Image (cartoon, rainbow, N blue to C red):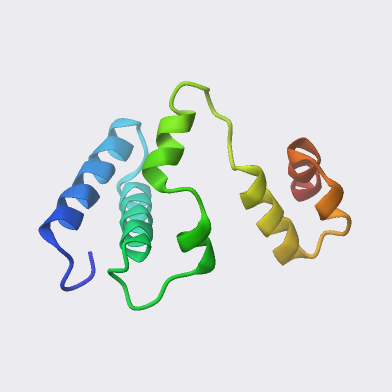
Length: 107
């Protein structure tokens, strides 16, 4: 955790890390997921110096987990797929639906 982080964020980090470990992921993966999630929440709450646009505009981690918890492995959102397609320069991405974006990114 970054220096100066609050006790709440420390507890959040440990809770997420334990949850990921319980799912069977490695220690390194658990630490990375926990750190990324807590850093995103810190950015959304205005607790960090800098924040990416996706950290501020994307659906919150807790809400995303709640939406997906009963629907199985739905994967990334259409917005996330679109952003990756934009970064890769995939043509025609604005007219693609989620399935088409997934196929284009798999190539």
